[in-house]
Amino acid sequence: MSQRVPGERDALFDNAKYLAIVLVAIGHAWEPLRDGSRTVSALYLLVYAFHMPAFIVVSGYFSRNFDASPARLRRLLTGLVVPYVVFETAYTLFTRWTDHDPDRPISLLDPLYLTWFLVALFVWRLTTPLWTRLRAPLPVALAVAMLATLTPSIGNDLDLQRVLQFLPYFVVGLLLRPEHFRLLRQRAVRLSAAGVLAGALVAAYWAVPRMTSAWLYHRDSAQELGAPFWSGPVMTLLTFGCSLVLVACFLALVPSRRTWFTALGAGTLYGYLLHGFLVQGARAWGWYDPAWMRGPLGVAVAALVGAGVVTALCTAPVRRVFRSVVEPELRWAFRREALTPRRA
Image (cartoon, rainbow, N blue to C red):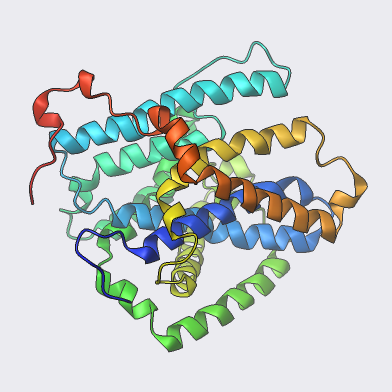
C-alpha cells in the first residue's frame, strides 16, 4: 500500500466504497431479471453475498474512534438521523405514487427500502464504545446475530433484524487495523482472491435452486423463511464466514492507488440514497417489460445503466445540490462545544 500524506484520504477505501456502491446498484438493477435465469440469479447471489458486508466492514473500520463526544454526536445526528427522516419520508411519498397506494403511512419506525442502513449505522456507531471495551466483541456480536434469527417477534420496528444480523460485520471493521489491509495487498493474496471469487460464482450457480437469497438479506428470522429454528444460527455462521472471505477478496482486488473514480468514493452515501428512486421508478414505468430485457443484452444494459446512474449520483455537482439533506450542518441547533471536534 502506498504511503499517504497525513490528513489525505486513503485511496483504497474511497475506491472500495465506490466499487461497492456500483455493485449495490447493479444488484438492484438485476433483481427483476432473476426469474427464469439461473445465471443472473447466480450473479445476484454472489453480489449480495459481499457488497453490503463490505460497506459495513469499512464503516466499522472508520468508526473505531467514535467516543460519543459532543462533536461526534452532532455528526451522528446530522449525517444519519436527519437524512433518515428526509429519505424515509421521500421514499414513502414516492412509493405512494409508483405503487398507486395513496394511503401508505409515513412511519419512522418501519424503514422503507434503502433507509434501513442509516438506522443500522446509527445504532452500531452509538454502541461502538461498548464493542471496543469488550474482551471478545466478535463472539458476542455473532451470538447476538444468531439469537436474532430465533426471534421472529422482533418485527419490523427500525428493521432490528438487519441491525442485529449484520452487526458482526461492523464489529469486524472495528477490530481491523492498517496492517490487516496491508496483508491483502500481497501479490499472492491478490492472485488467490481472483480465483476464490471465480469459484464463488460457480458455487452460487450451484446454490441458486437450493438456497433462497433471503438468507443474505438478513432481515428475517429462520421461522419467517419457513426453515427450522436451528437453521438460523447455522446459516448465520455459514453466511458470515463466506461473506467475510469474499469481502477480503474484494478488498484485495480493489486498487490502492488513485484512479479516475477515487474522488467518487466520498459521495457514496449520495449514490446509495438517491439511486433507489430510479430503481423503484424503473419497474413502475415498465422499463423491464420489453422481451429483450430478459436476455443477455438486457442484463448487460441494466448493469451499465445502474453503474452509470450511481456513478453520476456520487459526483461533486450532485453532492452540492443534495448536501443540505444528506450532510446538513445545522449549526444553529447545537451548542458551541458540539461544533468543535475533540483533539486527539
